[in-house]
Every structure is written in structure tokens, then in C-alpha cells.
Length: 228
Length: 94
Image (cartoon, rainbow over all chains, first blue to last red; front, side, top):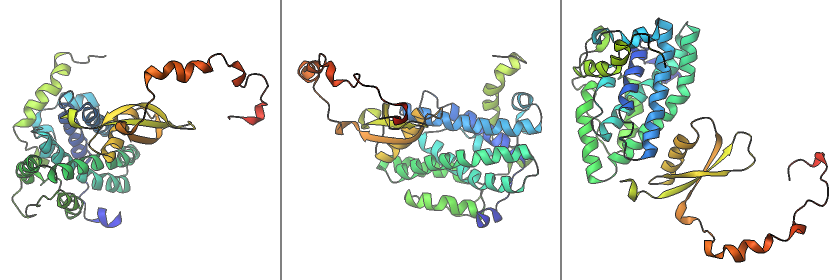
């Protein structure tokens, strides 16, 4: 644990909260569209875990609904990779592996360093949830990478699509977590020093976030204060 | 795609349960995925502490047409039920 966390950059709580929120929304877009009902439920479970983590953290920052539904894209701090479109199942699973690997390092580091008891509570609960998420995404990446000709081709395509978006989440420890999975998946990890996208730390995002928020925020903006 | 995935029967042992009970089935390409799918589908609300999965094809079932010969002879044999003596509370579950 110590060696894994020592070179991990612990992101600020807003980066983490927004990352979980936005990725949760992306995963929820799979509902009713996954290849099997079982996978549909699995993705729904993971999306709800991430939503719970996001809510727990947003509540420490202010009014959770206000923060989720009434901020503009440039005010979000999520890693850009979280907002990328789902693509095919290969893209979704590789994106999930990359983010799960990041969170597997971040949650323990956050739990060990935060002064805020509420944040530590969220992090400690998330450690167990994340362990299962990482197991799920790792299993799918190695299955698809080391599967049929087509599934391998799609995983290679996913790698091409996502590698340049690792900038916000990669660290030496992150490469150590992801490399064995990629190797088992018979996928070649591109160079660590390959170009990576501009950080979202200053509010820079891809064009995809605006469309995602338009859908996610539309109900709350049309009916402010709406209750079930 | 799911049509090609084998079916697995799922058995869950509940938190205070003494044995695994059949809860349903899942599709999965192998045992590992079957356990994970069973976890996702059948233990979302804290139902279980242990999961068994068995390939559905490996289950040998009695033939419904044999129902009369297999089960009906037991119906009128009340003396097989342990209802003619009292079990002390101390015995607990049998």
C-alpha cells in the first residue's frame, strides 16, 4: 500500500467528485443497451456506486444538486477521460479500466491523508467498491484483448482512442496497475511519454462534456427544485 | 450474442442461512464470469454471503412424466412425517 500510494497525486475533492459523477452518467447510458442483461445490471451497479461516491464528496463541497445540475462545463474538474463517449464496449471497458486503476490508487491515498472525516468515510467505502470495479473491467479487457480477432481489433482501436487521455490520471503507480492487465490482454502498452491531452485542472474539456451535461442537467434546469 | 452463452444456475447462501438456495440463473461464458454476474444480479441488496454456480447443462432433472410414480405414492403415507412425537426445543434445527 505504502509504495503504491507514495507516488500517487491525490487529486482535490472536486476533481474526484466530478470524475465519479460524469463517469457514472456515461455508464448509465448503457442501461438497456449492453450485450446481456447480466452486463446491463453490472454496469448499472458500477454507475450507482460511482454516483454514491460523487454524492458523498459533493455534499462536503456544498449543495450537491446545485453543484451537479447548475454548473457550466468549464466549472467541472473531472478528468477528461471520464466524459469521453462510450464508443463500443471495448472503449467503455478500457476507459473503465483506466479510471478504475486511477481510483484504486486515489481512494487509499485520500483515506490516509484527508483531514475531513466525511471525505475519509467516502474513500474507505469506495475502496471495496472500487476493488470489484477494477476486477470487472480488468476481466473484460483481458477477455476481449485475448479473445477473438474482432474483439482484439476493437481493443486495439480503444487503446488508440484513449491513450492520449491518460494525462489527468496516469502516474508510475498507475502504469504498474494497468500494464499487467494489458499484457494479459495481449495488448501493447503505448509509450508512457507519448503525447497526452491538456489537463482538465483549469476547466479545459472536450466538446463532449457540454452534450453530456445538457442531458444530465435538463430536468433539474427545467424544473428547479423538483422532487420525486 | 447472449444466445451463445451457456446458462448457469445460481445458488446463494443468505446472511443467516444454513444452506445455499437456488435463486435463478445467469448467462456467462465461463465459471468466473458466472460468479460475477450472479453477484451483480442476485446479491445487489445484501442477500448473500456465498455464491455457487453450476452449469445448467450439468443438472440432471427428474422427468415431469414420472411425477405420478415418483411422488404420489408418498402422499398417503402420513406415518413418514415426524409429527407423532414432540421435539424438545433444545434440539434446535434438524
